[in-house]
Image 1 (cartoon, rainbow, N blue to C red):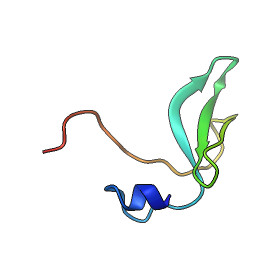
Image 2 (cartoon, rainbow, N blue to C red):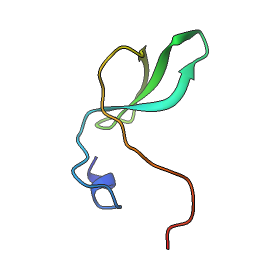
Image 3 (cartoon, helix red, strand yellow):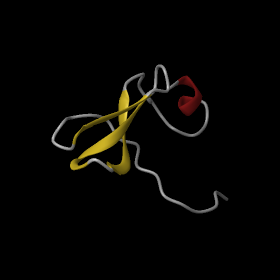
Length: 60
């Protein structure tokens, strides 16, 4: 989260954040990224986690 806060994101927390990727083994689950350790995990889409709204493109 410290890296995110120093690279354009405001107040990113050391917590887990949703990715946009559905788990291959279960369409009711998606992947998470744990910011403190960089681990990946899968969780049901009904679970509550943070997200980072981002979009593609070039930053001017």
